[in-house]
Structure formats: C-alpha cells, structure tokens
Amino acid sequence: MEMKHLQFFLEVARTGSFTQAAENLYITQPALSRIIKSMEDELGLPLFIRSRKKVILTDAGHVLNKHAQVMDKQWQRLYAELDKMKTVKTGQIRIGLPTIVNSFFFSQLLASFHKEYPEVTFQLEEAGSKKIEEEITNDKLDFGVVVLPDKHDMLDYYMFETDKLKLVVPPSHRLVGREAVALSELKDESFIMFNREFELRRLVLAACREAGFEPGIISETSQLDFIEEMVAYNLGITLLPESTCTELKRDVHTIAVTNPTIEWRLAMIWKKEAYLSHVATEFIHFAKGKLPKSRPDQKG
Image 1 (cartoon, rainbow, N blue to C red):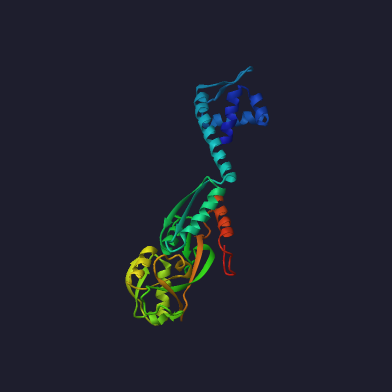
Image 2: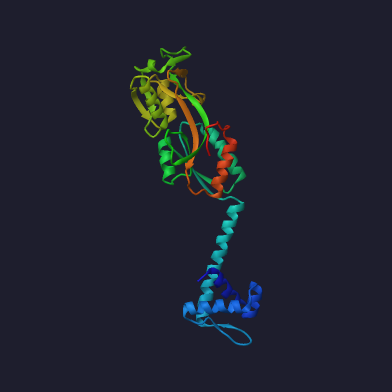
C-alpha cells in the first residue's frame, strides 16, 4: 500500500465526499474511487459506507484512519528534515587528526566552517595516520588528516602541505651549530620515535635503511609533547617536519637533514567512492578553500 494512496484515503475520510476529495487532490473522481477500491481489495475489508449524501467510515476505516494519520505525520516530518538538510546543512562530521599536526590551525578551520554552518557538529579523534586510514576505510571516520602513504588505492585525497624532516637535538648535542647533517651521521644515535600507528615512523625507518643503518630506538610514544620533552632532557634525538619544529616550545635545536632528505606529505583523505552527504561535500570544498594552494600532483 503506497503512502500516496493512504493520503488519498485520509482526504476522503476528512471531507466525507469522493467528489470534494478528488477536487482537493486534483484527480478525477473515478480514479479516486478505483484507488480506494483497490485498497479495500488489498485489505479484504470495506473502508467506507457509501451513500448519496456522504461516505462514512466503517470500523475497518476507523482503524486505518487512526494509523494512517500517524504515518502521514511521520512522513511529513521525514520530508521536512530532508528539505532542511538541503538548505541549512545539518549533520555531524567525523574527523581524525594526528597529534603531530598543528591543532590550532585545524581548530580555526573547523571554527570557520561551524560559523557558516552552525547546525553541523564535529566528532574529533586523535590518532596516528595508519589508524585514521583504517577507520576511514571501515566507515568509522568521514575525513582524516594524515601523512599520505605510498599506497592509497582506497582513498581520495587533497594534499596541502609538503615538508622536509629536520633533526631535533638537545642544546648540548655534538651536532649543535651545524647547518645540515647527513642522515648516516646519526647511525649511533638513540632515536625517540612515534609509535607504529604513525606513518612518520615508517618514513624515518625507510630513510635510515636507505642510508645504510637501522636506527636504535630507545622510546616510542603517540604524544609530540613527550617526544619534545625527552629530547630536551638529552634522552635521545628525533626527526620532525619543519612546520612542526616551529611549534616546539622546549630548549631544543633543529638541523637540516641531507643524503637523503625525507619528505613529509600532509593530506586530507576520505574513502574513495563512498557516499558523501551534502554537508560532507560542502566541507571538502570549504577545506580546499582554506588549506594551502594545491600542487600539480594533488587530487580531489
């Protein structure tokens, strides 16, 4: 039984007349009569007692009228909410952010979007790039900001920052004062690293192996503040993106790394070919307008 037919039934019940109901519904009276007859045939019960003056609901008609009114109200609410989504842009956006990125910048981005679309809420999750990728693939997050992996077949992305990693050492370190160091010069150093959830760790390990050594890792964590603190207390060295280095607050020194240089590509990602709501699509356009300009190899 179609909702439209239930609404036709309700109009006949309200007016008590097939003629008046047909006029109000902009259909012919014979067509309306056929629709009501088909409903009665489907239910196996008469819905109206027909007379020359007025049609009256049967017992079955009263039951259907009660439930049809509830269904019609719910149907109207459904369409009202869908129409609201088209115009007001409501909903929730789930975003994953790694602890290594500048959270103040993304707070500004989200605040700007929320100002324009105040009915949109955000669910934020801090994790490493690998965990964020996994949760986007499993539909637990809508977007993420990650260090772009080499393989990203299941992801669409917008790359907005390319950076180089720099060496971070305590003020008493033997390399302080150097403008640049070859990565191979760090083979005997103690490394403080992000844990396995972070794509940055994989980049550093791959570069060290390319330089001919396996780094000696003395500590792993998911917290940038803890890494900075351990370096400042002379427990080891680390490698961080240049943009992140500018945000460090402890007494540490940064030095350029060469042979090889290590590139860090930051991107906003979402699941390829996934359904995107109106508000999610709007967020992509908004973020692209606020994030740095695209490079030639950027997608999305």
